[in-house]
Length: 130
Image 1: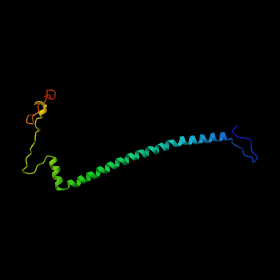
Image 2: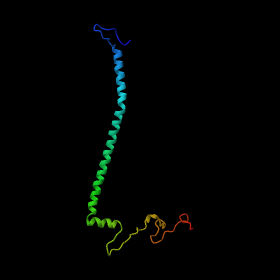
Image 3: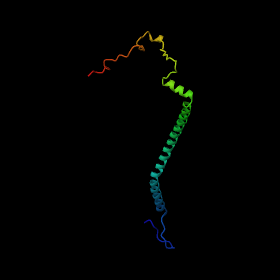
Image 4: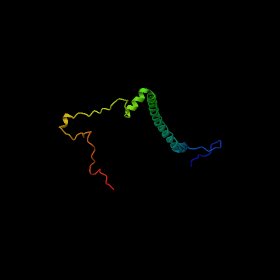
C-alpha cells in the first residue's frame, strides 16, 4: 500500500521510496517525450551550419565572378576573352608550335601522330553505308 495511515492532520502520507520511484518515472517519461524535439533541433542546427558554410562559398564565388565581369568590361578583358576563343587581330597569323620529339622515347614515331595526316577511322569506327 503506497500510502501510510492518516496523520493527525487528516491527509495521507506517501512513503519516500514510492515517492522517488514515481518522480523518477515521471522524469523518465518526460525525457523520452523531449528526446524527439531535441534531436530535431540538434539536426537542424547542424544543417544550418552546413548551409552557412555553403553560402559563404557561394558568396566568395560571386565576388570572384563580379570581379571577372568588371575585367571583361574593359578593353583588355575583351581582347583576352576574344583570344581565348581563337580570334586574331587584323594582320596577325596563327602559329602552332609542335613539341619536339622526346629523346627518351627511343625513336617511336607512333608516339604522336603527325598533325598534317588526316584521321583515318579504325574499321570498328567506320559507319556502315545505307
